[in-house]
Length: 450
Ligand SMILES: Cc1cc2nc3c(=O)[nH]c(=O)nc-3n(C[C@H](O)[C@H](O)[C@H](O)COP(=O)(O)OP(=O)(O)OC[C@H]3O[C@@H](n4cnc5c(N)ncnc54)[C@H](O)[C@@H]3O)c2cc1C
Image (cartoon, rainbow, N blue to C red; front, side, top):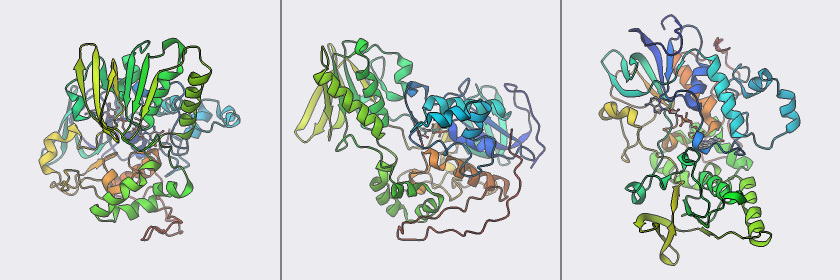
């Protein structure tokens, strides 16, 4: 590893070859940046945004985390790290008040503040620097940015997932048909309009809740459509949560692709569903508009309906869907696609695409240490966050795996056992071994800290 040299944020890259280049600074790569040793590793993390902001289009005032705050950037792999959420609270002089407040779920706005606080402490981050190309020149990865080139021995991708827009809506994206991730950025006025929300997960629920909650800007009609059998709550029970401990992840990774594919839909509600308090809030609000309201609210909640397409009409849009009664149509002025995020290979890998090993469904084959299999030299690796649902299970897109996965990646990057990642088996017997040794290995000091 080369010497660590700091450069003020925003300055151009030099010709040096970094040890590590992180692409994207969302929560996941922020976690890796926080856990990388400060000395002996040269690293830069780049993000095209001008500053950190966590899903700003969905940062509702009252939206809460779907996970406990201990699943922060560092705690589950290094509870002594200075970058923990608890240390953020302490340094912000609110730890005692936080304990008294005893929030059942922490607000996303507060976690966004926590992430920004970490950003202020790390000198390895560069915002306003989008990576437009990524190639390998035989000796190093070369990232082309609007601020010059960065060369690095290894790369860690943390570019998140692109919004998924169903084919039947793609041709009509625009002012009044858009993906849910842009909801708050659009600043739409739903007052007196017919609004349709497609998608029965947490995002669809948050948007539907927002649309029905403010008496001063109620739509004339609001329709919420899902292909699921019902508006289902998260399964947060202990045995479902065991799917998110490292021992289970190792077990999952060891299964055949077909077996993993069989397991994922069975486990979906432990990750991709609606928080129970939000469902209760929506139900109570609908009770209020049905029985205790001056005007009432014209709403429809359609389950078991598969959206097929949106088509233009003289005064808005027609949504077509298939359900138990055959083909149905709903008219709307505004269509919001809460249709999730794509699991595809991210655009930043376009130039390396023919060097990646893909499975028969066109997904990257991911090693246990979250490096992508490719045909380049084995000592040059591309690690990836949020790209291994199919190989590591539901822990992948969730905060539950964030710190642990970063620990695995940092150990692999440095070739040292800096973080104890061989932890936590499960109580459930899944059909294979998920135990771990209880003996604590000797760890090397990381030097990661404020
Ligand atoms: C609204 C919402 C709430 C969520 N809440 C929770 C929760 O409470 N608990 C939980 O466990 N999970 C939650 N998730 C799931 C998941 O944890 C988040 O999506 C999380 O933000 C994923 O982090 P990430 O770092 O992979 O990606 P992102 O947060 O999407 O960040 C990716 C970053 O990469 C940058 N980028 C992309 N391409 C480039 C490029 N070419 N060059 C430079 N920069 C680039 C982007 O600008 C962005 O800043 C939530 C998801 C959503 C959508």
